[in-house]
Length: 182
Image (cartoon, rainbow, N blue to C red; front, top):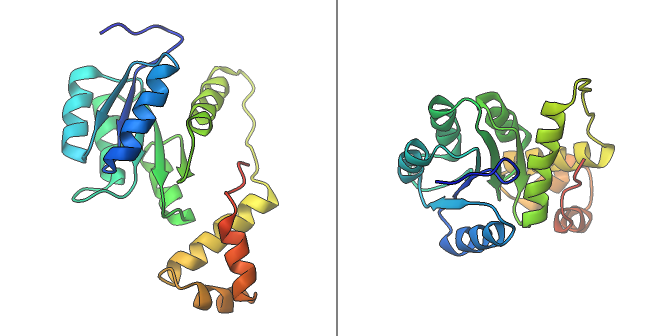
Protein backbone atom coordinates (compact mmCIF):
# COMPACT_ATOMS: atom_id res chain seq x y z
CA UNK A 1 0.00 0.00 0.00
CA UNK A 2 1.45 3.34 -0.98
CA UNK A 3 0.32 6.37 0.92
CA UNK A 4 1.53 9.87 0.19
CA UNK A 5 1.61 12.54 2.87
CA UNK A 6 -0.65 14.85 0.86
CA UNK A 7 -3.33 12.27 0.07
CA UNK A 8 -4.20 10.03 3.04
CA UNK A 9 -6.03 6.74 2.54
CA UNK A 10 -9.79 6.83 3.07
CA UNK A 11 -12.20 4.04 4.05
CA UNK A 12 -15.79 4.67 2.88
CA UNK A 13 -18.44 2.72 4.80
CA UNK A 14 -22.05 2.93 3.66
CA UNK A 15 -24.74 0.29 3.09
CA UNK A 16 -26.04 2.21 0.04
CA UNK A 17 -23.90 0.64 -2.71
CA UNK A 18 -24.71 3.34 -5.29
CA UNK A 19 -23.76 6.22 -2.99
CA UNK A 20 -20.65 4.38 -1.76
CA UNK A 21 -19.44 3.60 -5.29
CA UNK A 22 -19.96 7.19 -6.46
CA UNK A 23 -18.13 8.59 -3.43
CA UNK A 24 -15.22 6.16 -3.83
CA UNK A 25 -14.97 7.06 -7.54
CA UNK A 26 -15.01 10.80 -6.75
CA UNK A 27 -12.32 10.49 -4.07
CA UNK A 28 -10.16 8.26 -6.26
CA UNK A 29 -10.39 10.76 -9.13
CA UNK A 30 -9.00 13.39 -6.73
CA UNK A 31 -5.95 11.23 -6.03
CA UNK A 32 -6.98 9.56 -2.77
CA UNK A 33 -6.33 5.87 -2.21
CA UNK A 34 -9.86 4.79 -1.30
CA UNK A 35 -11.31 1.55 0.05
CA UNK A 36 -14.92 0.62 0.67
CA UNK A 37 -17.08 -1.52 2.91
CA UNK A 38 -20.83 -2.07 3.02
CA UNK A 39 -21.28 -2.93 6.70
CA UNK A 40 -19.62 -2.56 10.09
CA UNK A 41 -17.99 -6.00 10.24
CA UNK A 42 -16.35 -5.77 6.82
CA UNK A 43 -15.25 -2.21 7.62
CA UNK A 44 -13.52 -3.39 10.79
CA UNK A 45 -11.76 -6.16 8.85
CA UNK A 46 -10.63 -3.69 6.16
CA UNK A 47 -9.44 -1.16 8.76
CA UNK A 48 -7.35 -3.79 10.55
CA UNK A 49 -5.79 -4.82 7.25
CA UNK A 50 -5.28 -1.38 5.63
CA UNK A 51 -4.96 1.09 8.55
CA UNK A 52 -6.61 4.03 6.72
CA UNK A 53 -5.87 7.57 7.88
CA UNK A 54 -9.49 8.67 7.39
CA UNK A 55 -12.92 7.07 7.40
CA UNK A 56 -16.29 8.23 6.11
CA UNK A 57 -18.98 6.34 8.01
CA UNK A 58 -22.73 6.17 7.45
CA UNK A 59 -24.58 6.44 10.75
CA UNK A 60 -27.45 4.06 10.05
CA UNK A 61 -26.70 0.66 8.60
CA UNK A 62 -28.39 -2.72 8.99
CA UNK A 63 -27.12 -4.54 12.06
CA UNK A 64 -24.52 -2.54 13.93
CA UNK A 65 -24.60 1.24 13.61
CA UNK A 66 -21.97 3.72 12.53
CA UNK A 67 -21.59 4.72 16.18
CA UNK A 68 -20.38 1.19 16.95
CA UNK A 69 -17.96 1.43 14.05
CA UNK A 70 -16.50 4.72 15.32
CA UNK A 71 -15.52 3.07 18.59
CA UNK A 72 -14.03 0.06 16.80
CA UNK A 73 -12.01 2.23 14.38
CA UNK A 74 -10.62 4.31 17.27
CA UNK A 75 -9.54 1.07 18.98
CA UNK A 76 -7.71 0.00 15.81
CA UNK A 77 -6.01 3.38 15.31
CA UNK A 78 -6.59 6.29 17.67
CA UNK A 79 -5.18 8.75 15.09
CA UNK A 80 -7.83 7.99 12.45
CA UNK A 81 -10.04 10.89 11.40
CA UNK A 82 -13.68 9.80 11.17
CA UNK A 83 -16.45 11.76 9.49
CA UNK A 84 -20.02 10.59 10.04
CA UNK A 85 -22.65 10.92 7.30
CA UNK A 86 -26.32 10.65 8.08
CA UNK A 87 -29.68 11.22 6.51
CA UNK A 88 -31.15 11.50 10.01
CA UNK A 89 -29.14 14.27 11.62
CA UNK A 90 -29.82 15.41 15.14
CA UNK A 91 -27.87 17.11 17.87
CA UNK A 92 -28.02 13.97 20.01
CA UNK A 93 -26.45 11.71 17.38
CA UNK A 94 -23.86 14.35 16.50
CA UNK A 95 -22.84 14.70 20.14
CA UNK A 96 -22.64 10.93 20.53
CA UNK A 97 -20.58 10.55 17.33
CA UNK A 98 -18.10 13.22 18.46
CA UNK A 99 -18.02 11.78 21.98
CA UNK A 100 -16.98 8.44 20.48
CA UNK A 101 -14.21 10.04 18.42
CA UNK A 102 -15.62 11.41 15.14
CA UNK A 103 -14.23 14.76 14.02
CA UNK A 104 -17.58 15.95 12.64
CA UNK A 105 -20.80 14.86 10.96
CA UNK A 106 -22.57 15.89 7.79
CA UNK A 107 -26.15 15.38 6.73
CA UNK A 108 -26.91 13.68 3.43
CA UNK A 109 -27.15 14.68 0.67
CA UNK A 110 -23.50 15.71 0.70
CA UNK A 111 -20.93 16.20 -2.02
CA UNK A 112 -17.27 15.27 -2.13
CA UNK A 113 -16.09 18.86 -1.71
CA UNK A 114 -18.02 19.22 1.56
CA UNK A 115 -16.47 16.02 2.87
CA UNK A 116 -12.94 17.05 1.92
CA UNK A 117 -13.52 20.51 3.41
CA UNK A 118 -14.26 18.92 6.79
CA UNK A 119 -11.10 16.83 6.66
CA UNK A 120 -9.04 19.83 5.51
CA UNK A 121 -10.51 22.03 8.25
CA UNK A 122 -9.71 19.36 10.83
CA UNK A 123 -6.16 19.00 9.51
CA UNK A 124 -5.63 22.78 9.61
CA UNK A 125 -7.09 22.99 13.12
CA UNK A 126 -4.93 20.15 14.38
CA UNK A 127 -1.77 21.69 12.94
CA UNK A 128 -2.49 25.23 14.13
CA UNK A 129 -0.82 26.32 17.35
CA UNK A 130 -3.60 28.67 18.46
CA UNK A 131 -6.85 26.73 18.27
CA UNK A 132 -10.01 28.69 19.06
CA UNK A 133 -13.44 27.23 19.66
CA UNK A 134 -15.69 27.91 16.66
CA UNK A 135 -19.21 28.96 17.56
CA UNK A 136 -22.01 27.78 15.29
CA UNK A 137 -23.98 30.41 13.42
CA UNK A 138 -27.53 31.25 14.40
CA UNK A 139 -28.75 29.56 11.21
CA UNK A 140 -26.87 26.36 12.13
CA UNK A 141 -28.29 26.33 15.69
CA UNK A 142 -31.80 26.87 14.32
CA UNK A 143 -31.35 24.07 11.78
CA UNK A 144 -30.07 21.64 14.44
CA UNK A 145 -32.96 22.54 16.77
CA UNK A 146 -35.48 21.90 13.98
CA UNK A 147 -33.82 18.54 13.24
CA UNK A 148 -33.95 17.55 16.92
CA UNK A 149 -37.64 18.48 17.26
CA UNK A 150 -38.46 16.69 14.01
CA UNK A 151 -36.61 13.59 15.23
CA UNK A 152 -38.44 13.75 18.58
CA UNK A 153 -41.72 13.86 16.63
CA UNK A 154 -40.79 10.74 14.68
CA UNK A 155 -40.51 12.68 11.42
CA UNK A 156 -44.07 14.05 11.67
CA UNK A 157 -43.76 17.51 10.09
CA UNK A 158 -47.18 18.71 11.25
CA UNK A 159 -46.45 17.82 14.89
CA UNK A 160 -42.96 19.32 14.70
CA UNK A 161 -44.40 22.55 13.28
CA UNK A 162 -46.90 22.70 16.18
CA UNK A 163 -44.13 22.20 18.73
CA UNK A 164 -41.94 24.82 17.05
CA UNK A 165 -44.84 27.27 16.81
CA UNK A 166 -44.52 27.79 13.06
CA UNK A 167 -46.70 27.00 10.08
CA UNK A 168 -46.22 23.56 8.50
CA UNK A 169 -45.33 25.07 5.11
CA UNK A 170 -42.70 27.30 6.71
CA UNK A 171 -41.16 24.24 8.32
CA UNK A 172 -41.21 22.39 4.99
CA UNK A 173 -39.38 25.30 3.33
CA UNK A 174 -36.73 25.30 6.06
CA UNK A 175 -36.31 21.53 5.73
CA UNK A 176 -35.90 21.72 1.95
CA UNK A 177 -32.75 23.84 2.33
CA UNK A 178 -29.31 22.35 2.86
CA UNK A 179 -27.95 22.73 6.39
CA UNK A 180 -25.76 25.78 7.00
CA UNK A 181 -22.08 24.80 7.05
CA UNK A 182 -21.20 26.84 10.15
